[in-house]
Amino acid sequence: MYTTYGKPTALDWLVLAPHPDDAEIGAGGTLARLARGGHAVGILELTRGEGGTQGDPDTRQAECVDAARILGLSWRGQLGLPDGGLMETPEQARALAIALRFVRPRVLAVPHQRDRHPDHFGAYHLAKRAVHLAALARADVPGKPHRISRLLMYQGNADITANILVDIEAELPTWEAAIRAHVSQFTGAAISETVTPEIVERRRARLMYWGTLGRARYCEAFESEDPLVLDPAEL
Image 1 (cartoon, rainbow, N blue to C red):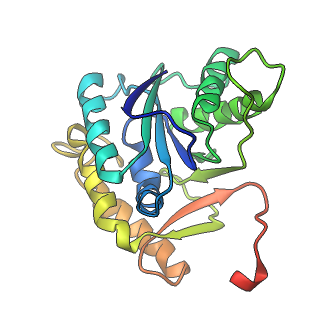
Image 2 (cartoon, rainbow, N blue to C red):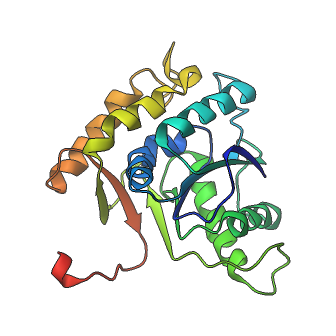
Image 3 (cartoon, rainbow, N blue to C red):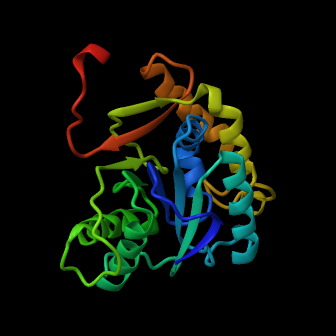
């Protein structure tokens, strides 16, 4: 693992991205809101996106740096696992566990387990094993054991059953600018439903849908597998 932006620090939120740009698309508004509120937030790319149809790894890394500045990230890192080969192996889990011990996030957001891209649901299962490994005192992992307080899933292309909505209306221009920083992916010909110049329009429609359910204009959606404990007075 290596740092691509900022300085390593204990993070309030860390978003795992199978490929460059996944975190901005699925959770960029929330990261921008947290950063504006003074929280330490970061993104860890699991791969360099070397298997993508458009762009090359060096170009995509430079785009990640631009997007990190826009979002106000405290830190951004690159794990260097194989694009197209993310899976729950002991070697990959150990590499990710080392990273989790390195930046010690309180909340970890990962791709949804039902997402259609193999690297996305592969990243979910990899993260679950790495979170467990990072917390074990006797694990063969460098660094002090670290336990994640909350693991959340963010939306890729598949539908999710959201139980957390974050109002990001104020952050919408920042969210859009961070996505558009990935010029190699979102200009030119449409390659897929995600790698397309229409990405902002497509994702804004989802944000508006979740906003309608949350009585807001635009919301990002997350799903927690564990129950949330809330103060009833805040409902």
